[in-house]
Length: 287
Image 1 (cartoon, one colour):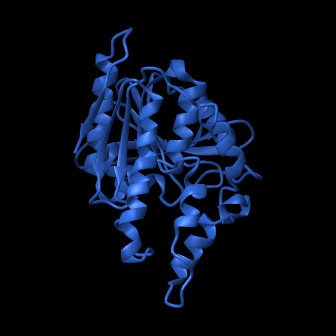
Image 2: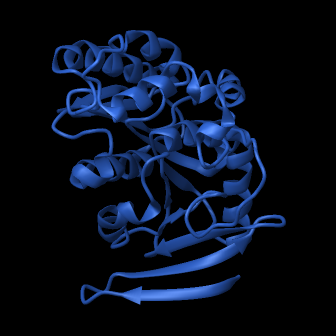
């Protein structure tokens, strides 16, 4: 472990960042607080780990919480691609082991990070006490939503043109992301995740298309309805599942409505603490 840094605010909010070797390359790990279970934050594609700061501040008062930069992101080392979801889950597993951050873990994944956390919970089920999916990526989302984008038109913004191209096939190329993600293989890896048993699971769904300036107003509501329905499918992963809606927030809920993410994590921590050794639990909704 090298390059340790510490930062302390007047509110006794302290974080520590370390560079951890996970097998020939290093990942930047930031941790704070104490207490079990440890909360593990996994970011998506369009946000950095620093954007979890309000969540880290709140949860570190009672639990250890950590986030990190995946390879080819932020302060972490660059590695050759393409890279799959299973490669990244392996990185996280080695990171936790090497850093000495033991389980159990409550996993929190935003967007693509939610896909990774589902796969981690599947492969390392005995380490995981709960799972929070924050407007998480669905392995079928590009196939479903690509054809639903409005046809190209003269007034289209450059951002919409780029977004449409990515969703309608650009995602198939690892060169489309700075991490070199092989989405096609990663989605096939997710196919084996059919059930997580009675693991406490909370699904937080944002108003992603309702607040997208890149999508024409007349297309936002129907796209949002499909988005919500697809994310509700995650509830089938566990017999102890709940969900909440963040329809006043866009996709980056940790940035736009961190309080809702904090609430979802606390709910899942409580469910993990109260979880009986046997039994299926139930399903709840919070709005």
